[in-house]
Length: 319
Image (cartoon, rainbow, N blue to C red; front, side, top):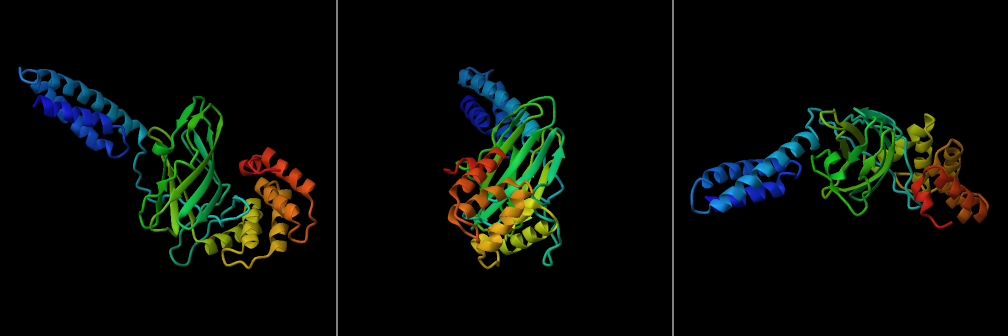
């Protein structure tokens, strides 16, 4: 009995902190506590019994804390969110998505640039891209409270498809972990992969202890995405214009490749204050595309403007 108590207590301690699976660890830790308590009163394997009781107690208390205060609280709102973007081969482009009804399933999509908040956390949907079954999403996370917040990819973020498949996080490319100071910001990039593919992906963000989760939802189909970008651009959304330019520039989403149209849209977005538009416009000048003269100096100036303006990808491009 002492051996069983020790094994149960140890396993319970090891897995109690894992989201969702941790409930099984709680049960094992509790059994380890009980068996350890009984075994401690018997001469045989008394030491293992005491050790099992101690490990079980620690695992049980730790598990309660993690599962209750850290793991996102399930919500009846199953409208997890998603995002979609045409995949610009010249660099990721943020997009302004417009809410609209789809004739097939009538989903409501969130625009890029949309800000949603819960508790002391506010999240801005900044950019996204879709390539095959991999989705990349850029977020701007703001801590509006007077206390610092620890943000962890493993415990805060979850993405699902319309089929219910859970997206797998690529931790090598994801960068969303850190401590956000009071009234501070965290720029976050998420990369998820769906083995079965997805037409709609849904992002769920745990906003804090006992707070309502934050949801974003967008399509992942390029044709549908580029049409949304067009609607957003027509409505005055500069990120939508920049993303629509990427559709024309790469000839994706049902758009015929048109460098002139693409560079015009990048220029419109850049002049409207969208830094990703400036980043892509720099490519037009660098290559002399879209009817623009080949001007490496102008391209470098635009790239610097984009970098200084917060387009992180622009900062990584060699000028």
